Length: 132
Length: 132
Image 1: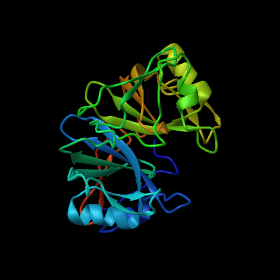
Image 2: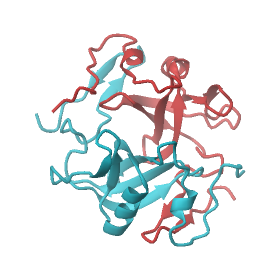
Image 3: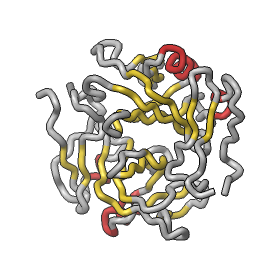
């Protein structure tokens, strides 16, 4: 049951840039996931340049909205994310980077940024960091 | 290394609604993931009412931006997503619903909405549907 908004890939080089539904800032949302464990590591954004760099280098590259610049995750810490696969969703507004991520993906030194559990009463509980 | 933008949960009932950084439309992004396989199923949005319903009923509930209404995923198809865990990321702008999802999460009758692979030349290739 395809919908109007669904992308229709044709297998042509560079077509991903036309298929992506860019937001008002010419960015697209990116979910980074550890390929082996399936753990969702982080959520960020990419612009065209970041995606091109990701495809060219095989290293997960994002666009930092706060710094307004290209952002190779792990460039400072050394914990770069090696790309296993890039995927795009059915309506073209979210990318999925399946990566091999050696260290903490989160600036809080946790494996994942999703380090808080929400209980059914709406209370929130934080996991212990990997590195204290 | 906490940052200014990081949430600081205290384990109090209902605090998640204060910790969430709502967007301009009073929505928050939600990633749905199959708990057992780790597969990222879909990306959607929730408002306060949707999150409250999710926590109360244990059934993944979203806010449909196109229909502008609460959206119990699978209400029509019967493939509802049972919530195993709800998580929130370090800066409070994305939720993760870890679910047990019996059927296709995607309206294209695929397990996941991330059914298109992006190759290094920028070409896009679509997985076969689960149900043809």
